[in-house]
Every structure is written in C-alpha cells, then in structure tokens.
Length: 93
Length: 93
DNA sequence: AAATTTGGTTTATAATATAAACTACTTTAC
DNA sequence: GTAAAGTAGTTTATATTATAAACCAAATTT
Image (cartoon, rainbow over all chains, first blue to last red; front, side, top):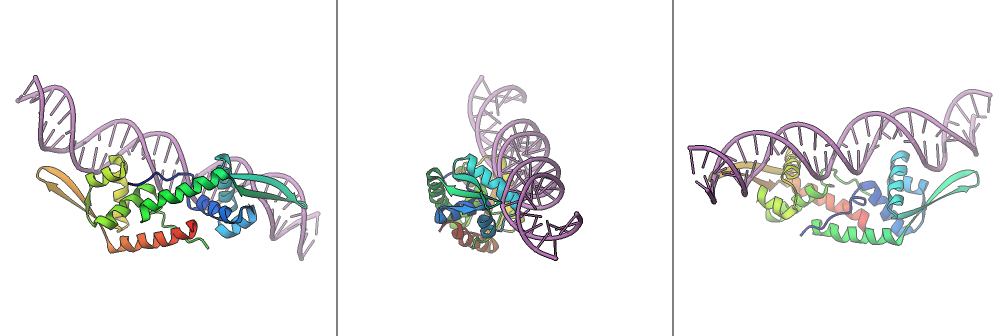
C-alpha cells in the first residue's frame, strides 16, 4: 500500500536542497539560500544532515578571501531521492 | 520556485490518512489503522489534528456495543490535499 | 575606526511525531 | 461469575525535528 518515506528527505527544506542539487549538480551556500528562502542557520543545519547521511558532499573553500561552501549530490543521494519520489507517489496517486 | 507545503499534510501518517479518505470518502478507525500500519495512539492524535483543521469530519457512533469512529474528508480537506500535491510537484519534477 | 555586510555555525526553543501507558468497555474461557 | 484476553480507542510522556535567535570571524563600506 503506502511505502515508507525516508525521513531525511521528507522535510521541506532538505527536499528543496536535494531537488536543486539533483538538477544543478553543484551549488554553494548562497545559491541554496536564495533559492530556498531558508535562514542561514536552518540551511546550515540541514546541509550538515544531508552531508552526514552521505547524500551530499560538502567542500569548504575560499573564494578570494570569502569562505565558500559548495554542495554536490552523491550517487547515494541521487538514488535516495529517486526512491523517495517513487514511494511518495503511493500517497498522491 | 518551490511552493510552501502545508505542514499539516506534510506528515507521512496524515498524508496517508488523507490519501485514503480522498478515495473511499468514508472510513473508520480500524480501517485506517490497518491500511496505514499506524499505532492506535499515533492514529488517534493525527485524526484529531485533521479534524481540528476541518480537513476531515469525525463521527463517533456505536456499532452494536462497540465504539466506532468514522472519518470523512471535507471539501476543505479535498482542496488542501490537491494544493499540497500541486505544490509538492515543484520539488520532485 | 566604527558600522554594516557576508558567510556562515552554534545553541536554544518551539513544534512534531511516536511510543507507552492507560481507560472503558466486551467477549471468551474456565 | 470472575479472570483473562481482546477491541477501540485516548492521554501523557518522551524523543526527534525544525526553526529561530544569537553569535562569530572576517571583509567591506562610510
């Protein structure tokens, strides 16, 4: 009947982050913040969670003198997202 | 870009309840419990929330000597569900 | 050099989900 | 008829989550 929904992805902000990363393949903190309208704190925490789950890879660099956090979806993240979407459809169709 | 997701519906169990009610139009506690595999306590709480939001109408009767809780989706609930699904698609497509 | 902005992180609090415990019966077995 | 088990839930406590507020370090602007 209904499939389980990965709790890590069943969160508005984390889902938005993953949705963005699956299409652009690489994005920085500022880009994600603008697109999602999230607060910095919330975004920081949710990026961490996705990173710790291995759904994204986070690289911290410097752009000139400013810090820059780059996020990239992993293959694990892609497949988790695809499964989530597949399972979600058992609820809405 | 991304649309807001009604927090009342963005919950696995409440979404499952609504998904069921939108197709059957009327269901009792036991039916919902079986279909969702939820615990009684969790189901009870989530039914309450949907009821208080006016998304479903709850009627308590007796089936012979046993209590029976019947749930029915309201028009407000139907439209909330439809909007939720529409908005959700901004994340997964 | 003081104030503001950038790019974040950490910590505290509010909201949510879930499980465990409980209630109020009814049915079945002895 | 009474003890045990089952039904149909509710209430309460706890764990998890999301979010906001506060903070930090450095850069830039005035």
